[in-house]
Structure formats: C-alpha cells, structure tokens
Amino acid sequence: MPVPKALSPAHRGDDQLPQATHLADNISAVRLQRLAARLHELGLRSKYELLRELAPGADHLIRLEVYARLDADMVRALGGDVLPIDCLCVIDGYKP
Image: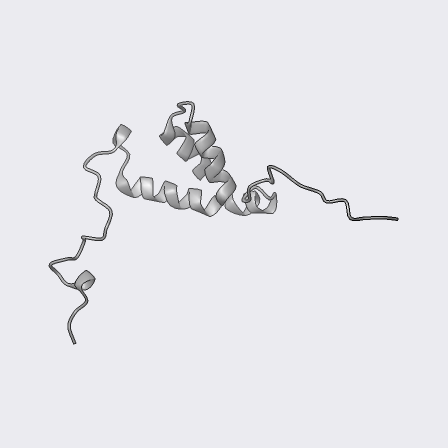
C-alpha cells in the first residue's frame, strides 16, 4: 500500500505552518503557543475582546499575558465565553 503524499518523508512539513525565525520581545514560540491555547480556552468572547483592545494599538504580548491569567472556568460560569447578542428582534405575537 503506498504511503499518502502528506505522510511521505519528502512532503512532511509541507502542510505545516512556517516556523517563525524570531518573535517580538524574545517571546519563545512555545510560550506564544501556550498563550494561544489559554486564549482559546476562554471562548469566543475573550478573543473578541482581545481584538478590540489590540485594534487601537495595545501591546499584544502584554494583553495576551493578562488574558492568560484569567480562570477559564470562572469566565464560563459568568457567561463571559459567549458573545452578547448585538441586536434582538422581538416579534409581537402575544395578544391577551
């Protein structure tokens, strides 16, 4: 049975993300991956809030570190892992 192209030694790594040659402020790739994993655990709302903070120019590494310190269970318990509804349409179908 032939080895799939993606698993053959000649093609190993072709489908992987390129490795960064350097990271700002000497943060290691492993640390950045850990910060990304922690942010993911916090849910969609935290990602949205982080992007809102970064858009005007906040320091991305400092903000990531702050978010990484949040307790994911507490964020979920308080409903902070989901986006709020921006627009709520109510259809009046109730007639007493």
